[in-house]
Every structure is written in structure tokens, then in C-alpha cells.
Amino acid sequence: MINTLENKVVVITGASSGIGRATALLLATKGCQVVLASRDNVALEKVAQTIKERGGMCEIVPTDVRDEESVKSLFRRVIELHGRVDILVNSAGIGIYGSTVEASVEEWDQVINTNLKGVFLCTREALSYMTKQRNGHIISIASKAGEYGLPKLSVYCASKFGVIGFSQAVNKEVASLGIKISYLCPGYVETKFLDVFPREIISKANKARPDDIAKEIYSIIISEKNRAQGSKTIKYLIRRLVHHVIPQDWHNYMLV
Ligand SMILES: NC(=O)c1ccc[n+]([C@@H]2O[C@H](COP(=O)([O-])OP(=O)(O)OC[C@H]3O[C@@H](n4cnc5c(N)ncnc54)[C@H](OP(=O)(O)O)[C@@H]3O)[C@@H](O)[C@H]2O)c1
Image (cartoon, rainbow, N blue to C red; front, side, top):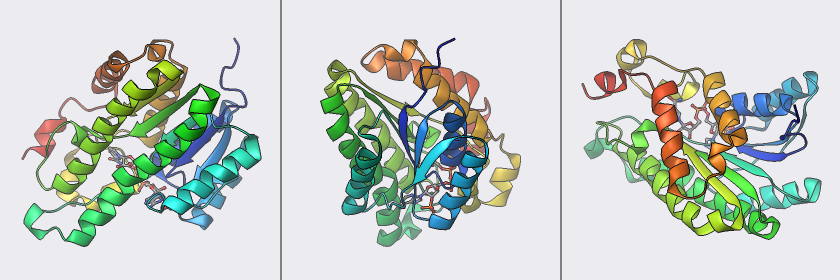
């Protein structure tokens, strides 16, 4: 079978940990040239070392997705290294748990700037190259909290609803240029992201593993159905994820 991902240039934000890290490891085993981006240089080096030990190809580019210049220089470096960008996985993100009246403006800014402005900045920069290439695929990690308003997650929900609206709108802008836009809506995933939730909620919850989400991302990338343009693509992805990744009892845990 032909490996369609051989030498594809993939930029992954949030690659130092959790879902981003698992995705980087998996795509590197599929022959992709992976560019690992997040703030923590030391953690990125460790991921890069693991990839190289397994025979994969990668570079690290320390990046803060909240910062326009940092994101621009990430993509400049990718183009310098590889001359193109085939796939962007927007995985960088942070969570916050607590009532809306107790949320500070600083917390709002941190979450929105990382989860939503970060997706905007990285997507815009990737698109500036992908539109010239007339191909590319951008996959953003949204959340079930981007589909349902959930108590004590209002700020996080606002960021992830934003990611979904943004992705749907961009999809309509660029589908005719041969660029694919996708997003995923995972439920709980066993990563350090869950540290912000109260232990009693997390201990009861069914949790996916980062590897499960990485496999979903891989299947989205290689899926022929995903080549369909427009919103059908997105509905198809949500339906699949609801059936395959999101625990059936998600709402029982979140709506208590
Ligand atoms: N875990 C879950 O239950 C769950 C469920 C649904 C959706 N999600 C979403 O999945 C994505 C990945 O989260 P995860 O579960 O893998 O959590 P994680 O293990 O905490 O990883 C988060 C990643 O985001 C990076 N990051 C945070 N702020 C950043 C910034 N300003 N600039 C660049 N990178 C930044 C972190 O790296 P540095 O610290 O090195 O910057 C880290 O690599 C997030 O968007 C999250 O909202 C998670």
C-alpha cells in the first residue's frame, strides 16, 4: 500500500505534551516530517529525542501561540526548512474550571488567547502558504465543551465554541482552493490538562488516551471521506467522534 503521508510536512502545536505529543509520535512513524511547537523547549527536546530514537524525522521550534510574531516565525522556519506546510494540527490549549463569577479577566485572556487566538494565528499563517500551494489540511482540537455549554467551564466553552465556529467559517472560505479544515470534539482525555478539574469528577469519568485521539487525527488525515468539501466533512467527523471517542455517559458526569 502507498504511504500517502511519506515526507508530509506537519506542524503540531502543543506537541510537548498529551494529544499533541501522541500525534507527533504517531505521524512521525508514518513518515511525516514533524515540526514540534510549544513553549517548553526542554519538553519538546524530549519528544524529539523519542521520535528520532524510533527513526522518525522532526524539528522543534519553541513557539507561544498567543504571540503573533512567535507564530509568524514558526511558519517562516518551517518554510525555510521544508519549503511548504502540508498539515497543521492545532493542539495547544489550556483549561480553567470554576464559576463564571469567580473568573478573572486575566484567566479569560489566558484561555481565549491560547485556545482561540492561537488557533486563529496559526491557521492564518498556515493558510498564507497553503493557499499558494493550493493544498493543505488544518485540524484543530476543539472539545465536547465546544458543542455544549457546561457548568464551571464557561470560559473554556467560549474558547472551544469559538474554535468550531472559526473552523466552519474558514472551511467555507478555502474548500474550493483544495484546503481541508477539520476539527475534533474529544471528551475527557487522560493528559495533564485534566489537572484543573476536581478529582471527584475526573475519577468517575471515562477517559480516552492521547493515543486514541492521535489515531483519530491520523484517520481524519488519510480518510477519503474527509476529502468531501464543505460542512458535510465536519458533520461526518463529529458523528464519528461521538460514536468512537466520546464516552456515552459524558453528560452524566458533566451536568451534575
Ligand atoms: N485532555 C482533555 O480532556 C481534552 C478534552 C478535549 C479537548 N482537549 C484539548 O486538547 C488540546 C491538547 O490538550 P492536552 O489534553 O493534550 O493537554 P496537555 O497535555 O496539557 O497539552 C497542552 C499543550 O498545549 C501547549 N500550550 C499551552 N499553552 C501554549 C502556548 N501559549 N503556546 C504554545 N503551546 C501551548 C502545552 O505546551 P507548553 O507548556 O510547552 O507550551 C502542551 O503541549 C487542548 O486544546 C485541549 O483544550 C483536551
